Length: 329
Image (cartoon, rainbow, N blue to C red):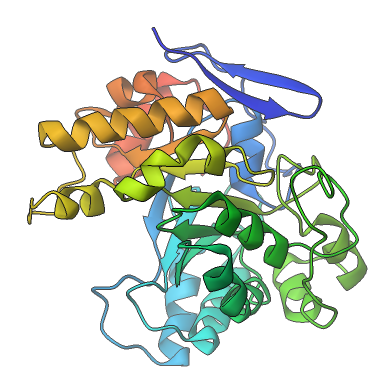
C-alpha cells in the first residue's frame, strides 16, 4: 500500500491510502477562506467541477455572473476555471467570481468554493513566465484561490511563477530557493471583496500554502510532456508548489493517441508516465491530481489521488463516504 506525504508546517502530514481520515469540521463555520486547503490539511481528498471550459460558447459578463451564482452552492469543493483554451477575459472571470460571492455561502459556510485558474501560460522557461507575468497578476486580482501552470518543463519557470504570484511582504523560502515576490499594491481591492476580508488582511493571507501556513492560495504544475516529466522532481520541490498532475490527455496526444483519454485504462505508454509523475509527487510531498469516476474512485484514492478531477458528483459522494468526510458540501 502506497503512502503519500505532505510537508505541513514544521513536519509532515501523513496520508495513508485507504486511511481512516481525520474527521473534517462538522460545524458550518469555516476555519479558512480556501475550502480546499481546509480539507487537504485535514487529510481529506477534494473534488472539482468546471467553470469556463474550452468547449464553452462565448458568454457575456452578465451570463458569467449568473453562471457563478448557479455554482455558488455546488456539490464540488473546487471549481477549475480554464483560460488556457477558453477566452482569456478577466472581466468574465471577475463577473463569475462576483456571482459566486453573491450566491454564497457554500453549505460548508465558506464564502465561495475555491477557484483555481489555468492560464494560456506555459512553463517553458523563466523568461517565458517573466514576460507573461501580467496574466498571473490579473488572474489573482480577480479573487481566485490558485493557479495551475501548464507544461511546467523548467524548474526555473516554476520559481518565476511563484515569484510573480507572491507579495514582497512574504519571506518564507526567500533566499532559499525563491526570490522576493513582486505582486503589487492595488491588486488587493477587488480580490479582498470577493474573499470577504479587509484589504490589509488580504495582503497577509494571499500567499502560497503550505509554504506559508497562513496562506490561502494553491499553486500547481502540469507535468504534461516529456521535458516536464524529466524535471518533475526539481519542479515539484520548488517552494510554493502544492500539487501536481501528469496531464494524461496531453501525454496521450504526444504519443499519437488522439482520443485524449484521461480515465483508466490509459494506453500502457501513458500509464507509465502517469505513474512516474505520481511517484515524483509523493517524493516531494505534494498532492496529486487525476480523474476519478464512480467505479474507480476508491481505488484511485488508494493509489494516491487527493484532488479528484472528472466533474462527477457521484464519484465525489462515494469518495467522501470512503474517507469519512463530514464537512458539508
